[in-house]
Image (cartoon, rainbow, N blue to C red; front, side, top):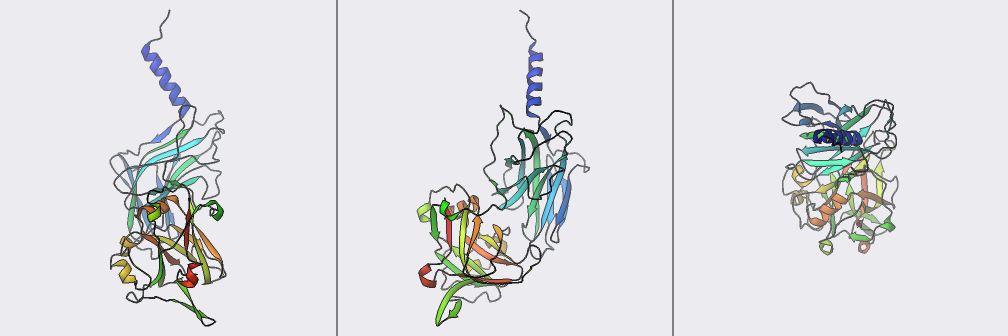
Length: 388
């Protein structure tokens, strides 16, 4: 019987696997500054540049001149894949994968794969939560609904959004785009997040946890306690927590009954609005509130005595509050409504684990809003976290 040479078998197997997987890869291992990656930025006062390193590229964003921390910056390149022939790949599922390492943590980035027909800037992307600066994080997802047709021009990008008012960078290497096949069925990376999902229905969330402590602190009067802050109506005081250009509501919870709980999906921060003052048509990106994680400072504060300085311990703000927001939210135009704010599973898990000490509400633009505090009416309208 005729035997096929071993070398030929290996070549045939290799060629078959290469063809079936159709992998495009950029190792980002360049020996020249002339590389196919380009940068863009917008909304704020930022500068971007690329640095070629040994085995990776570094995307640098200098946001030190941006006063409001409202900016975006992307680095992208064309994906020359697969061969532009007549074979129909439109039913094949595309995946994108990369290894990244941030200069600061915790931070989110988004990764995107799109083509020349894409018009929605938020289509075909996922966010990824990066919890440390020491390790390379493998991020991976499949853009839902993205199909490749012969002659399509694919492009991948990585984006940094509202990381803070300093200089930051993201290191990138081993970027891959490939088709799923019968022998190659990857899974989405665990830190992948939907970008601005619709709020969960309250009825679908099994746990409701009322805030343990809530208070308002004053940036302009940092030694002043605002205990009892509120509004007098019909002879009674309605205790409130308020956000404005100098007032910050802070909230913390007791998760002792959820010590080993693992969050499965997005949850809700639910606040009942007392009143909201805002301009009818705010400037783009403004007239909102910004939910922030409290990462440091004093942990055992209480609403009767806490001040801004007491909370922060005179630490730099970026050591107390994560500079990148959890989410920005538009406000209802009227009071007596519940504001339901999506909170990602990774933020909820950090709250439960104690890595994040609580949440704060910052203003984004000219806005003045008050929510009912726990001290009012026995906490009937107090803030709650709702999750599974």
